[in-house]
Image (cartoon, rainbow, N blue to C red; front, side):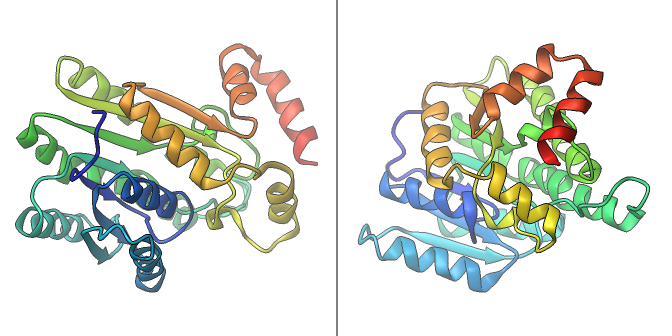
Length: 263
């Protein structure tokens, strides 16, 4: 898919960060938007930012938790009724890690992350891939992370979810390999977004050290990746070295390197 003018783009987690950046960049290209976020106020800020572009963008918004399949289905049904079938799905909504070691993490911490970061991707895929099939074209984009390629300390909940998103998406690629629908897995690295802004000392250090890539840069890179049918999209600060480490670095050496970098 090369031309997004008048195409319907679904973006979850569009209230801030990468989700807002995707929405703005697609609006600039003349797309119609169906936007979700858990935070209705943030979602309205995104909508107003887009309208301020003066593009007369057609926008549908819905505030709900992506882990709730019933709400996702309502969103899909409403979109079909009010706009039509979606052409591009960006399963972007996510939450950050609890920041706890496995020893200190409880099952609620772990399950909460899987619920939003993994189940939300499944729900968005399950509801909207029939839209792409109905159009006989389109792109499904699932957002993993560089931490869906390597593990880091005190992040097992987030890493587990993002590794699972990568595996889920690769499975989809094998199911749709002869289809006009393209499947993409995005591994962002070092993106400067609100998702990574806990107030503890360790999180502040991580933010200052690693989160250096503006979200609009990855949004443009992903849109270009959709155009070029790149199934795996790795982008952002330190993303390429991390990808290399995931392929070639012995696990024992990676443990030493990452603990030194985070200390």
